Image 1 (cartoon, helix red, strand yellow):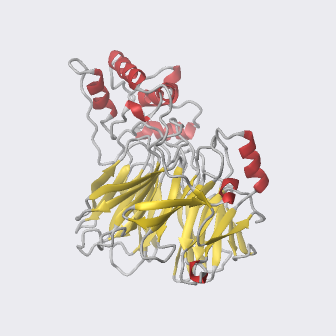
Image 2 (cartoon, rainbow, N blue to C red):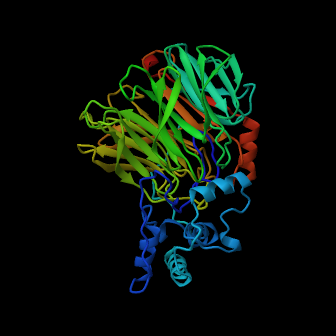
Image 3 (cartoon, rainbow, N blue to C red):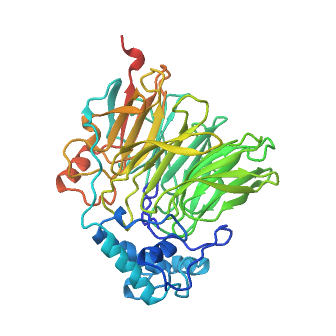
Length: 517
């Protein structure tokens, strides 16, 4: 259950599962009782019923006891002062959650079996946080990139969107307060618009801009997000889709091949949510719900099985984490195939499709690092993973680069040497370490080895969003990073002072590869 939505993300996740909702296409079966089962088998039966079983070793003993087990209990109908699922929730949210049956009205487990599960996690979990495996030292000083800092924009450093416009050379920037700016490379404001809520996504099509606002960024069941269309360079928008439930991602495609561009919207929600495609018709849009679960954070639309119909790959968070392909059927419905599953404490945060090994099949670049949840702690499994497509959309992990709090990764041939390099940002770095921890550039050395670099100013911002494109049209890929300073959690006072005094809103990393002798 993600508790706090930061951005282009929604930071907040809980380890426990969401109860099946209407049209969720999921059936959960629990054992009648635990007699004859070992404690481990009992825990696997209940805690692996609706998501991948979370091994006790994934979190420290105190994190399990203080927050996570209590939320797990709520999902099984355990009720007490410590297990009240509606504590500090609005009347509206409580009504929605009861109506959706997110928390069961009846207890789904006996008290004795529940105490056995609690004891199992308490006994098996490590006392201390398990640190990440050793990684190569990061070289300070980026090859091929020149740094340009933006800290004087007429808006607060609460970045929720950064995006390049390669046609005009502009950079679009939006924040949590709904302040949306178009700026040039020198930071001069070309246009400024006040949206209704924080900006979570933007797409451009036929000289028009489609801007998605998430609604309330903090956890809520209120559906007040919007999709608004602007003429390029315009100030007055046309409302296309109202009442969206904390939407965080937009994909545009002709889903039904009728010649009109439809919208695929990830309505992340909170405890409830869904993702849909909105069919464009002469009178507006008709919503088709694909899956009614919260936590879909990004989609990619492609024909994944070469049958002539567009399919959707979706990254799902909020407990039942993983990647799925929704294959479009002949009747226009979708059939889900899970291609990767992750433990519910991973904090899945982004993915991209790229061909890493040059075999013509699209591989997956994936990050895990969302850490604003009940299980907040440094996690050794946070970082960047590459999943190679072994054929017929069967993916196998081939590389892992550990990085606490990894939130987004962009792959591309940044140095123009013929292979794919990776840029990664972290919103939850290890702030106890000296030196910049929030950005790393992984230069591909071949044979799936990468050399890590960063830059000194990376420590002056808390990086939540990033984009990559050849914005200046000189033949190499540039990067732009956006910083969000909000609800700074567990940060040393000197780090908070560094962030606030620097006031970084964006950093442009201008690629100079094609300028090199």
